[in-house]
Image 1 (cartoon, rainbow, N blue to C red):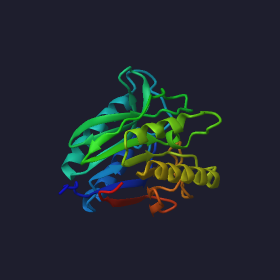
Image 2: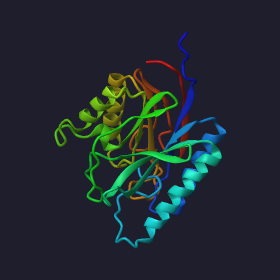
Image 3: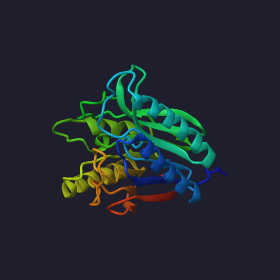
Length: 258
């Protein structure tokens, strides 16, 4: 008789992402606290949740770099203490010393994998290459950052499709999409994003967890609707949606199925 892996709980969040790294750190810890209190095994955050979005260091002595490095170390330790693994969005330098937009897979107290945003329209960041799944409790998980999943097929032909094909070939089970989207194109953006997330979840037969910034991309407060619908999606469509504004957290139990 085949022994199936035990179920586990994935979670996501819709939290403020600002230009204040210490503020962001506190918001991420609040999300981890919620996850720990609600039985979540692995939690994803929005794009650049720690660092803040759309900036580049002034130089190698920019004090924000040390804040980010200390924040990452703090969150790795905090995730262990709270028993919650983490898909952490933050800008950082890659192995080639290029400023990049990343997702850091913090699993059992170690950064096991880093995904760099592939489809870049922001001049601040360096383009990543490809996507890779990571085995997590018997499931293949992966992460994409914002436009990785919804890029304009006219401007970036085959870019998103290439990433999706790669994930299908790697038999992805759970995809974490970490977003930080404009708030001035709400209806268009929500429709396009939802279509892409649901269509690729259906094609790949994976569950998708979408996390989003509840503030504006520049870090200023926003009390209107978010740019996309955060939540959990399956191949059949949305399962759990977050509120359409403000801070929110959500989770879903993953059972063995394909």
